[in-house]
Image (cartoon, rainbow, N blue to C red; front, side, top):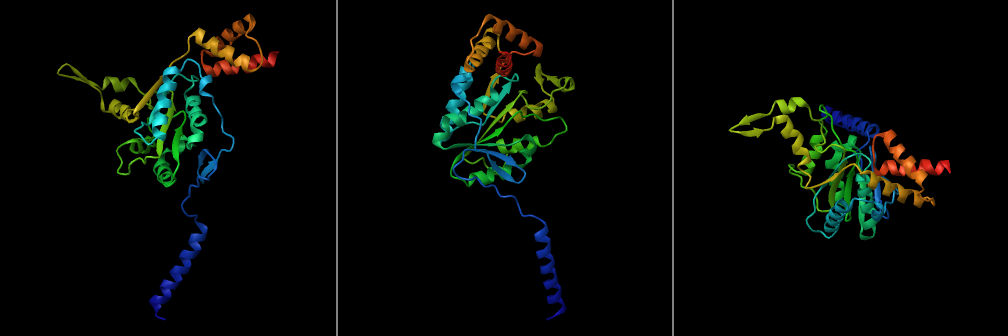
Length: 279
């Protein structure tokens, strides 16, 4: 055996040892028989008992419910459907409405994969793996927002549009955010805008921030509840716990919301739990 052959043999042995120390690429296993998954650094984790939300229980969201239901229905039928951004006031039902899609369409084969914001830079790999599965998936990005120095939004931006790798027909992205444009907006951005021939030209910073949310084809806005709407949700939540909506409960629920500075479905449900504990 020549010296060169010996060298190659020693290199092969060295590579074998290195491969045992360094794990290979993560494989995503969409285990059959389940509909809900959570993305973890090591791959997908099955959510055996997911949070079932009845769409009918989401009050004062008729327009949002109808539009998202129609979009999901078209997606499952293989028709044209849009990636959706649900944005607006906190606690107003954005996340619950996405969860309700799974409860509504699970029997038609819909699956949901919850992906944390910290993993948005892995979206290409996640989507590539899901494309090989015969089922249809919603990628669920909850409470999505990016800071000014956070470049991970670029992966999401490319996945939505702009990449040579197209979004497969069996994957759609639904995201929630308290921000309409997903990124912070500063006064300086507006000051950097200019007037040209009587027309306002936004600054490059504003254009960059708007361009991300613009790539969602469906925008659904959620606004704070009026007091009457809030009380209607409180009554539903109180009755669901086997109690009556008394005058005392009504008065205390208004005080409860005032202390938190918000009227929303989340606050209403929290009050119902608090009221039940007092009985």
